[in-house]
Image (cartoon, rainbow, N blue to C red):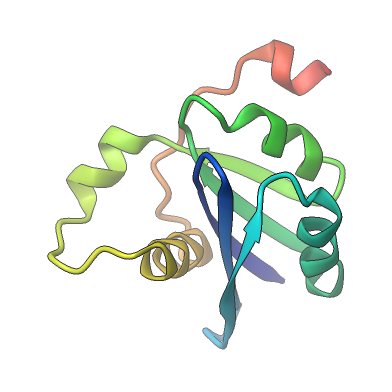
Amino acid sequence: MRHIGIDLHRRTVVMSAVNDSGEVVSPVTIECQNTNAILEFLQPLKPFRAVIESTATYRWLYQLLSEEGTILLAHPAKLRLMIQRRAKTDRLDCQLLANLLRINQIPLSYIPQTIISN
């Protein structure tokens, strides 16, 4: 099983994956509007679980990926409380999310039913 951490921004998405034994797939940065490239990155990683931090813009990505694998939302405030570090980059953030998902330590956020049923 692959565990994918996704750091979502307004224009880009940064993704990294780790398998059950901790081997890392190098992070990639993809333009948000290039949904085909996002899906192409994920295709060889199936089956996977992915985590996205619950921000104002996560819904389109959640809907896109939920047909491809299991998608979880991380609670941003609880995540910040858990992780206090000086170095913060998009590549580190997505790798950290992937590893937290691998060890089942993601603080989950509520997913509205309207997102799940669409």
